[in-house]
Amino acid sequence: MKGDLTVIKIENLRKSYQSTQGDIEAISGLDLDINTGEIFGIIGPSGAGKSTLIRMLNLLEKPTAGSININDVDLTELSSKDLRQARQKIGMIFQHFNLLTSRTVRSNVTFPLEIAGVGKKQREKRADELIELVGLTDRADHYPAQLSGGQKQRVGIARALANEPDLLLSDEATSSLDPESTKSILDLLGKIREEMNLTIILITHEMGVIKEICDKVAVIEEGKVIEEGKVLDIFARPQKALTKKFISSVVDFDLPPKVIKLIKEKRPGQLIRVSFIGEKTHRPLISYLVKQYNIDANILYGNIDEIQTVPFGTLILDLEGNPESIEKSINFLINEGLRVEVLENV
Image (cartoon, rainbow, N blue to C red; front, side, top):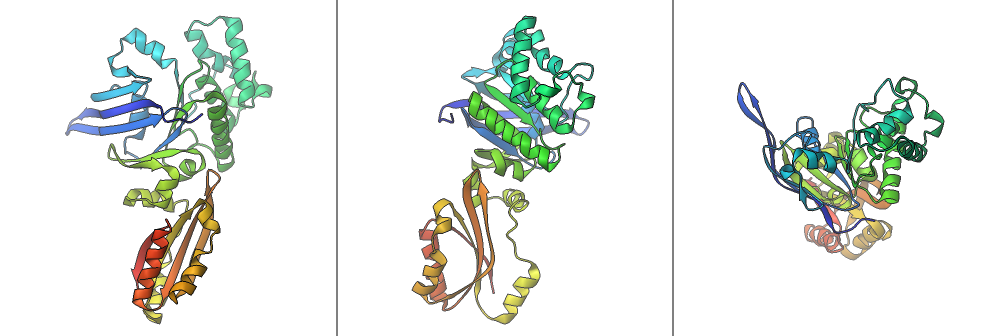
């Protein structure tokens, strides 16, 4: 179950690479706290440092500076032997699957157990349990070339779970998949989190993936966290331009310029965007606003979506009336706990 116990604490993490032009800093003083049982999304544009960051979480990439504490153990201070043992409790899912083409599904899943020295009977039993969990029992003796992309990723997930990890890292695990396969993989990760109480860190450049499955999200740009919080809060109150850009890719609530131009030409007024969450989506606040403040509220855009089964709504309103009444009506919405943005004075 999700809890408030911090399982991962990253402090002042830095990673630099040498080049002919001097040092290039991929990760730049990054701090993150991730709690046990969370699905924590990390999103950013290409070159933001996402993949470098996730590879540092199991020290496939060594930090230039900073600390990575997992369950109160700083991985950066471990000996090679202790690090190998610690890595067994950190599973990783890769974008391009990284399956061994000469091995069957079952043999791919048993591979990390072979490395760990687990006996044949025990590792095959564990592999069959995991193959059933990911829905590939009828493909256990198939080779990767005989599988679809979604099926290959299911094998990758089963393999990542072989050593019963506490932490699962997912590096763009759905970016090579079609939408239907992406949805099925995300559903599977959600099921695995619930059944195994895993903490999952999910790297992606797709806000739809964050919206579908993550509890919290960190937005990174140029190697730094620029915004972080619960997914619902970030969708309702994005602060940074990059965050708003990502959200607009899945919740398109901008008016076409021609519509704004027509409103400008028509008469004075004010455009606002109102965002609301949960039970507030069912309350007749706009109706009350119109009656109470004697203004007109023309709905130009409206949408209700879901973020992990919680309703999330957006309205764009064209407010007409006395400027003082309009101001009071906006304050009313804010006092009711809604997010209000003034889009355009027209």
